[in-house]
Length: 238
Image (cartoon, rainbow, N blue to C red; front, side):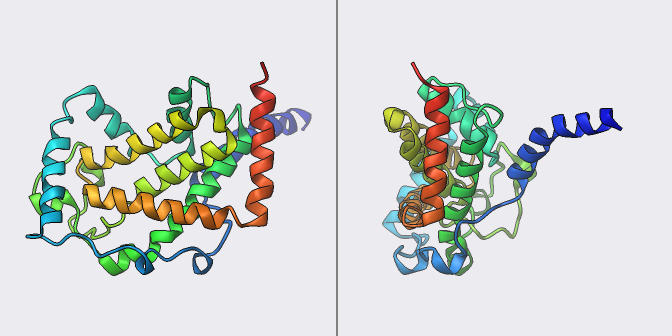
């Protein structure tokens, strides 16, 4: 019996980390988050100059698929907090894993999950087709392709990525430029793999800023920010 209890205790952190990667925890309900339909314009329609820009950006980004950058774009389809932390850590020259920073991992996951609520209604209202559907071309991630998935605008991946970058800046301002660059590249990966137009990603970044601003006013979020900051400082003392 003692051995079983010991194994359960040792396994608890891993179980907790798996749960946090699969179960969303929201700081605020969707009703209290900004509604992107109230401040974002409609998406560029085919035949418009802005859609021409989207089409050119798609063709340009597609050229990167056979490259190392294209491989990174495929990897960036992951929405797990572990992948976000790895990308931000690599950019800042810091080893960031959920095991090393459990408070930061939970805080980051909960934050960008909540920020994403800012586009929940917009995706349904705008119901935009995805680039691979419009152009009739395969993507480097065929397992995620769906013929009737009209949720391209704004990008859900990109709002999480830019929102996560803003959160990392709040936790560790010293590496702000590195985090923002990584967050930007995570969003651009969606254009490279053909799951979003450039305007989808650009709109998502605006919505992420709005969502982050709302989170910053929440008392529980402020409390968890301080906890994540202390954990980060304690593990990075020089």
